[in-house]
Amino acid sequence: MSAKPKHPAAHAAPGDVWFREAKKRARSGPQLTREKIVAAAVDLLDAQGVQHLTMRNLAERLQAHATSLYWHVATKDDVLDLALDAVFAEIDLPASHHASWREDVVTFMTELRRALLRHPWAAALANSRPLVGPHALSRSEFVYAALVTAGFTGPDLSAAAAAITTYVTGTASSEAVWQQHDEAGVRSVVHHHLQAQQARYPTLAGHFPLSSDDWTAHFTRGMNFLLDGLAANRPAP
Amino acid sequence: MSAKPKHPAAHAAPGDVWFREAKKRARSGPQLTREKIVAAAVDLLDAQGVQHLTMRNLAERLQAHATSLYWHVATKDDVLDLALDAVFAEIDLPASHHASWREDVVTFMTELRRALLRHPWAAALANSRPLVGPHALSRSEFVYAALVTAGFTGPDLSAAAAAITTYVTGTASSEAVWQQHDEAGVRSVVHHHLQAQQARYPTLAGHFPLSSDDWTAHFTRGMNFLLDGLAANRPAP
DNA sequence: ACCTGAACACCGTTCAAGT
DNA sequence: ACCTGAACACCGTTCAAGT
Image: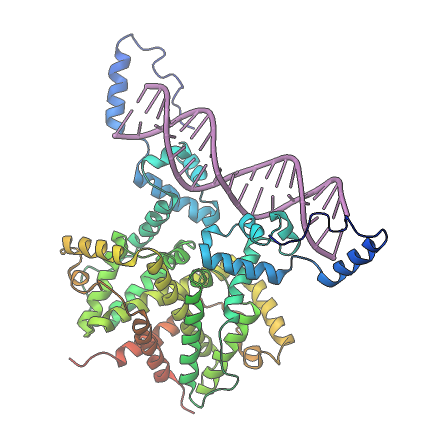
C-alpha cells in the first residue's frame, strides 16, 4: 500500500541503521493504541455490523494480529464498551444551558438519537450495558442539570432522567432494527397476518402502521408525550 | 439415566419385536419438536444466560445432536425469536378491559415488566428485534385496544403504543443488566469517580443514586410521568 | 513495553448418510 | 420424516517466546 520497501536499510551505510531505527521507534511509539483500536472498531461496526466485529477482523484492519489487541484491552467486551462511549462522545451539546429546561432536554434527546442512528449497532448495545463511560456520564450531567433547574430532585430526578434516556435508546434501537431487517417486507408480512387473523387482532388489524416512513415524527410525538408528563409533575418553584 | 436396556428386544420372542417397535414409533412421535426446543432454550437461558446458549449446549439438554436441531429451526436466531415470544406468552392479561384505559395500560406495563424480569435475558433481546411473534402481537392488541378506547388514533396511537412498550423493555433491560453486573460494586466505583471529578460532573456528583434498591418504585414513577403525558394529549371525546 | 505464533476449547451451519 | 457424523470455516483467549 505505501511505498515503504521491505528492507529500508538495505543500502544504508553501516552504523547509521541503528540510529535511524532508534529515532523511528521513539518518534512513532507503539503502532497499536487503545484509541486506534476503538476507532477501527467503530469503523468496522458501521461498515459490517456487530456480527462481524471479531478480534481477528478488527486486528486485520489494524494490520496486526488478534492476540496483540489483548495488550491494550482485556476482552472483546471492553472494545464494545469503548466503542459505545465513543458514540456518546459525538453528542454535541451546548456549553451553557437554555433558559428553558424543556428545550435543553429536547436538544439532548435529539442529539443522542442522531448519534445513535449514525451507528445503527449502538442503540441495542446501549440498552444492554450500564452507561457509565466518561462521555456517557458527561452527557448525563447535562440532562441532570436541566432537570434540576426544572425542579426535580431525589427519586423523581433519576426516574425522569432514566425515562428520557430509555425512551431515546429504545426508540433508536427499534428504528435501527426495523431498518436493518427489510422494514417494508416485514411490515407487509405482519399486515397480511393481521388481516388473516382479524378475530385474534380486532384492533391491531385496523391500526397497525403499514409503513412508518417518518421515524423522526414518530420519535417527536412520543418525546412530547413524555415531556408533557414531566412538565405536569414538575414541582412548584 | 432411565432403566431402558440397550437392546430392549434381546430376549423377546421372534416376531413380536416388529409389532412393539411400530407401536412405540407411532405413539411417541419425533423426540425433538419445536416446542421442546424452545422450552429447553428458555430453561438454558434462565439458568446460564445468553452467552451459554449455543446449539451444542441446547442439543445436549435435549439429549440430541446439535445438527439435529436444524430440522426444526433454520438458525440460532430462530431459537432466540421463539424463546422471546414464549416470554410474551407468559404475560397474563384480563380477557375484558377495564372501564379505565389507564388502568389497562398499567396492567399491561406491569405484567410485561414482570415477565421480562423473570427471564433476565429477555429484555435486551426485546430491544434488538421486531416484536412480531404471535404472542407479542396479541399483547400489542391489548394495548392498542386500550389506547383506542382512550381516543388515540393514527400516528398518535402508534407513538403512544411504542412509547409504552419501549419504556418497559428499556427499563427492564437496564434493571436486568445492572443486577447481572454487580450493581453495588459498579455504583460505588461510579460514585467515587464522580466525586473525584466534581468539576466535570457538578450535578451528577451530587445526585447520582448510590443505591437503587427499589427498582419497582423507580419504574412506577417513570411510568406515571409517561401516562400523565398521554392523558394530557388524549383527544377530547 | 509491545507484538507474534502456536495452541486450546470452543462456535454455527451444511450436507451426505443412515433409519 | 427425522436424526447422525463428519467436516468447514470460523470464534475468544492464554501464554510462552520474541524484539
